[in-house]
Image (cartoon, rainbow, N blue to C red; front, top):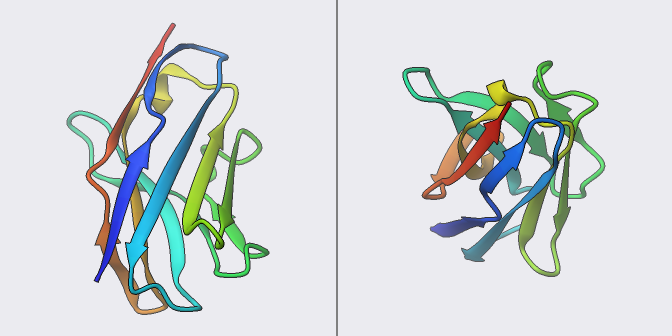
Length: 117
């Protein structure tokens, strides 16, 4: 079992930036994929970004491509989400997730991101 704890959420004006962090603890082995999802009020949880173990393989939702960057530091068991040029529609609770090719098995508690126009 892996525990995931997010941090870095907050309030920002449109056009601003935030960096989210997710610290993982527990039994972490190679090939553990990490990612970010988000859920806005009244909407389903949606995929934002994911990164493979080595950090060279990344995937993004079309809505955040070119604005968000996912990265990871395996020495610190931490994944980051750098969010630039934030828009009001990016406001949501952001969740860190981890798992393997078969699916996402671990979830954080979420961190709130608020973007004012």
